[in-house]
Length: 300
Image (cartoon, rainbow, N blue to C red; front, top):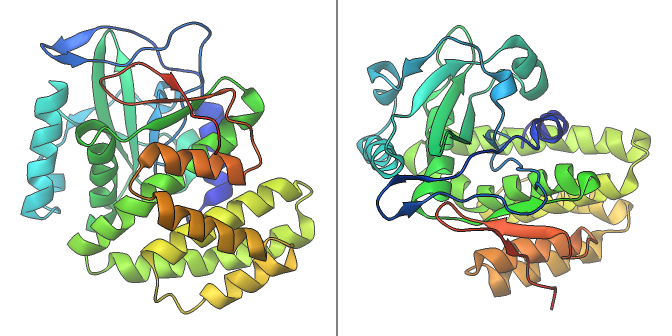
């Protein structure tokens, strides 16, 4: 979220790499892609990507004590539950330089199906360990996908992959960021500063970005996430003025109203974001770990 454009670039480049079918343990059916390939797209803070092995170096560790010690007891238990569910340890890899240039010096979580098994990998910046809340953030994203079976948006339309990745990212943040702030006191100030930094980027994009639709969509998602997870953020009026400047103030109000009506239905939230992006539901599917893809419901 803090580095939205970098996230979108990486998400677009990372698409189209899911593969494999099968099961890991009785009763756990891995999702698989049927018919023509659907581009797998990222899920959270630009950090969860389905299939980004092109960025992986050969060095690997298990998720050892130095990382687990950063987490509160509840999240250590979450790590154990995820590992039990997938039948594999959560492993850590260093970010390659190419990946760091794309997403910044942040951790990244990778969900990937290989050889009929599901793997969850945490990719770490080189050097000092990231802040505890940043590691916790990635574990919470894995929890949403693996344990809570949150739906993931897929698309076969190349021109929609970047936007679909961003929708997944921000829909996940509606639940992950509050959980992160509940575990880590420093997470609230981090996210407030991150959204404030986005205002500077939006101001520049309003003046210079020729893709007006992408600017509008990114600002609407930022408005929704900030409204839900940071209701006391003191710069929300500034973001609203920016939205009004591009003629999207009413859209912002309508989006928060629609979300308040459907927030308990995760697929309905994805569908609402697709509609507010002015996309047709045709060409989108949703998938959860443990099920096959299904068409995204048409907009009501």
